[in-house]
Every structure is written in C-alpha cells, then in structure tokens.
Image (tube, rainbow over all chains, first blue to last red; front, side, top):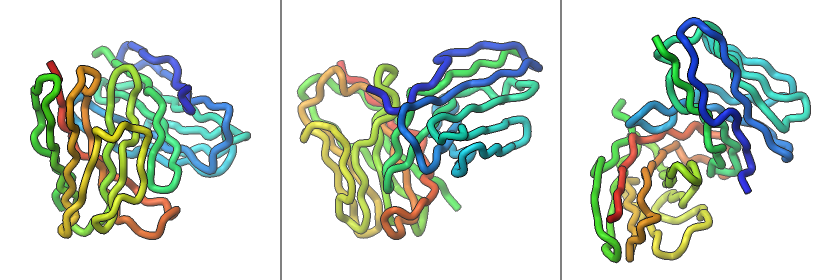
Length: 109
Length: 116
C-alpha cells in the first residue's frame, strides 16, 4: 500500500492551460515535499510545505498543504512545455524519503 | 559546485550476474542515499550511508548491499540479478547533519540497469 497516492497518474494538456495534481494520504504529515523529475535526470526539490493550509508559490506553480496536513496539491497556471515532467510528492522520515508514484505531466506546444 | 555523479549511466546484465554502481556526492556532503525507481513501484528507498556506516535501510532483500568510502563516495551492489531488478537506480547526497534535521537531498541522474 502506497503511503502517498498521487492523481491523476498522467495528464496531457495544451500550452497555456491550467492544471492541478493531487497528493493524498490517510496519514498526517509534519511536512510534504514536491519534486520534479525530467527524463534522464534525478528528482529536483521544488518546495517543502510545513504548516496546514500553507500556500507557497514558485513562479507559475502554486503548492498547497491541506488544513489537516494529510494532502497537498500543485497548481500550474498557463502551463509551458518546460513544465513537462514527473511531479513527485514525498514525505521525509528522518533522512529517508517516501515518494508517491508521481503525476506525469505533458504540456503540448 | 559539481552535482552528484553516477557511473555508469546505463548497464545491461543477465540474470544471475552481479552489478556494482557508483555514486560520487557533492563535495562536502557526507550522507549518500540510494533509491530504486520502477514504473510499477515508483521511487523506493534502499539505504543511506553516513561516515562509512549504514544509517538507514529500506525493505529490500539482502542481495542489495552498499558501502561508503572515507571520501564519501558510495557503491551499491546487487548480487544474483533478477529480471525485476531492472530499474533506474538513483543516489542522493546531503550534508548529513544530525539525524532528524531536515536537509535537502540532491539527486544524481541515475544508472539505468536492464536485466535480461
């Protein structure tokens, strides 16, 4: 059983559209992290959300941590082809990361 | 500052063989973690090394082992390869401070292993 469930698994959209992907769990987390992985590369940390209800923005990416700290969402405004990648949410336990299976996002020019 | 490097980038082996993968962390980083990434299971934690000692271990069979050298470089070994070991193996490095302190992990590009 995956601790973190990400949905949708795959999403294909046209350039300029908005999209939202989700990371859900039945567990409560002290924090969650979001990574982006591009083909042929390792994951790169985008953001860490810590406080329930917290919203963090990274250019056109908006990350939200649920009030109950059980879920998180990532919203991309006016998606660009450069946003294409596998978005992974992860929980950090000590110095190990537990990942969801990811949201594969493809932005078509 | 150079990033995390992994060698080789691609590898093809046959069932029953063994394989050794190498990871060089970012200069000054003392913690190295290894992950396995497959389409079915996603990214899963294998183990973490700090100061040449295994500090954390994931839920993988004993065929998967690792070590870390005094210069913080790390190797992982998989013996008696099985078809299901085909995966992208990623290593990540961090400063490796006190346990429980949140540090950013920086990932290498991975080694893609194909077992035939």
